[in-house]
Image (cartoon, rainbow, N blue to C red; front, top):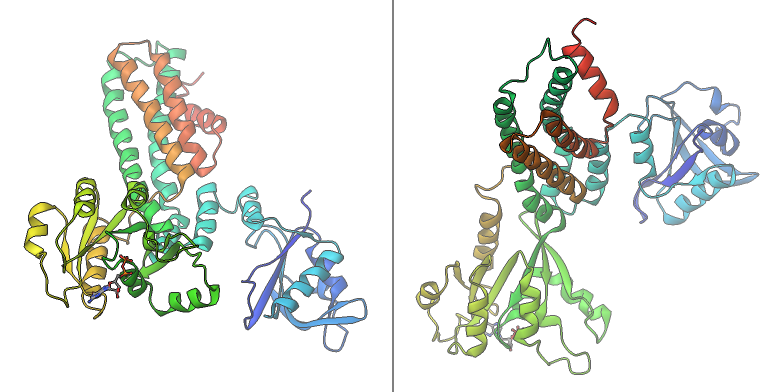
Amino acid sequence: MADTIAAIATAMTASGIGIIRMSGPESRGIVRKVYRSKGGRKQIDNEPSHTIHYGFIYDGEEEIDEVLVMLMDGPRSYTGEDTVEIDCHGGVLAMKRVLETVIKYGARPAEPGEFTKRAFLNGRIDLSQAEAVIDVINAKNEYALKSSLNQLKGSVQKVIREIRESIIYHIAYIESALDDPEYISIDGYGETLEREVAEQKSRIERLLETAGEGKMMKEGIKTVIVGKPNAGKSSLMNLLVGEERAIVTDIAGTTRDILEETIVLHGISLRMIDTAGIRDTEDRVEQIGVGRAKEYAKDADLILYVVDSSIPLDENDEEIISMLEDKKAVILLNKTDLDTVVSEESLRLRMNHPVIPVSAKEEQGIDVLEQQIKDMFFEGELSFNDEVYITNIRHKTALEDAVKSLELVENSIAMQMPEDFFSIDLMNAYESLGTIIGESVGEDLVNEIFAKFCTGK
Ligand code: GDP
């Protein structure tokens, strides 16, 4: 039987209230030992489920905190087990002491994600929902949150189930036909299967297409600012990041050790890699070489190329321009407050990227840049209502495996292999998809075969 776990469920910062959560068979027993009602009369473990009780947490004779205790017996709880939540004061110390007390009286500290794991093991949620919960907690911006919530509702699950249903139908058909050739014929079946496999494969591929963008939404768009020395990279970075960063930098002292900064524009996270900030700590004015910036740019999702409009392009610029060809990039024509020698037009002619005149000094053009970034990633390309996104790397791998298996089926059909060859690969695809929602294979298949094709024997 599972033991009883406990953890602080709220953030470990000073806040109005903090919640200590316990889950497992001993939850009530433990709270009985540490809870006292105001008059001391109430026996909390005699109280009904889904009730709230005002009182105090005691460690022996020592009062720890004034609390509200919530009783939620399984299976009507998040984990499906008996659960007790203790609302205590929100200071870090109060939360820790309440947690220590319930641990002293028999609970075990929960591992990260263990409540959700239990919810899964107890059949309260499926695996994709469990992962979505983790993603909700980790979501770094509102779009990622929306996508995770959507997944939590089971939208990924629904699509996967539909695809699996189709696949298993055909597995069952083939198996039954092989078992019972008198009743079920598979003559010409290859064609039907071919159509079906192509359709399901393209559904999986559509899911996979969302994976790239899904990933970006969760982790932020990896953004690199490049440009020759003195073009204004640091100044623009500071503008984008805003006041806060300057303060952080001051506190950090002489060495600027923050190389990556997440900023949020219109709810979109940009993970800014500040190549301008990467300097030799001995000599803080030494600029990063263009060569090094190129390395960072290689796997960036978005490149911001800063051009100094007050001086002609030089070999550094030429090198950057040649590298931008097949990238998503925005050209920032900086220092437009000065006399310009590089025109917007000349850059447009040379590169197939949007060009935005800005001035870091006068803080001009930043709003245009923000709008541009928003448009590039989201307008027309994604809508956030009923779309299904794959934001989880494990899901992505499983989908890719399923596509591979379906391709093998297509090959086998093309090569007119015997039918039992089809079902092996179909089963692999079915299984790969099943790992996304944490479902086992055997039972479903058996049920399916008997429900659909049992020919009365
Ligand atoms: P980086 O080497 O690319 O990071 O460039 P910096 O941001 O350090 O800027 C180099 C110099 O250009 C600094 O003296 C800035 O004050 C100046 N600078 C940056 N942006 C502008 C701008 O828009 N207009 C003017 N006039 N000067 C700028």
